[in-house]
Length: 358
Image 1 (cartoon, rainbow, N blue to C red):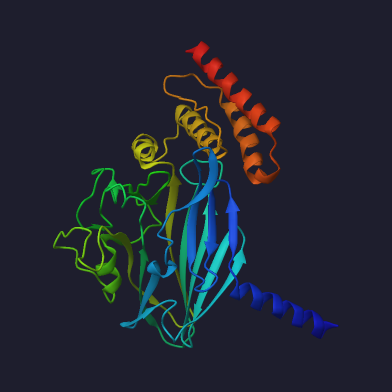
Image 2 (tube, one colour):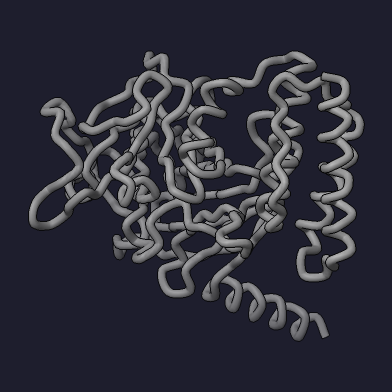
């Protein structure tokens, strides 16, 4: 009996390690490719009255986003190096992708998270862990290339707080005052939160081809654009770097990045400028709650939008409504027209109350 249970458990682990995973919560989703096991990030959006998950990184080939590790000055690209075997598993609220060699293990954990004061999952925490299997210390450096593509068709690849339209390659060091780096899209956007630890030691904004072809480090001093003709035209990416760390024998190191998703760049960039970093005030809390209700409502295909500017809002009522919307998102397949109409009625009531108090 024990042998049968152990065998079945091994079968389950093997099947899960070789098939795609799909985790969803709130407004965001993580899915892994069934062939490469590379992860893809998505946000729930509303397009022409229909809800869909919009990819936040380039999804034509999931291998264009990857992790590179330097182990005692030897460079390995995860998922491509024969020295590392790849497996995956589901973890609480996310996925874990493991790259294992005879000397070390590199683990990428991507977890759905509620960021920037949100009460629903609207972003991702990406954790990289390196475990040293050997009896000697290791010198480790990490690079993660994220193939941002949302703004390429609109001609606005990257936006910063200090520059809403970045047109040239650049390097942001740890002493940069930029609070975030945005890849703005027509229907959805994603921002690397860069204002406080945990964060990468540096980020390169560059042409994807040049960044991908670089063995590890990348020279962005030439201030080139995002085109490398004829190989890579109008093609940008982010390179996240973590400086050298000593991982002791049998030891472990961890680094982390945080990603916040949002709606169209034309709305998300002004919202970030006004609301991020979050302010610890009642007004900011009310505005954040209203923004969450608006985002969730739009994701459901509901047209009404509450403009919180200048309104005196009932925070308790907003929280209750957000809780209802959370439940509708979690059970979107069973939501009826009556449920949607009830939510719309509450939105109308809040709007009229806010207008009267104003």
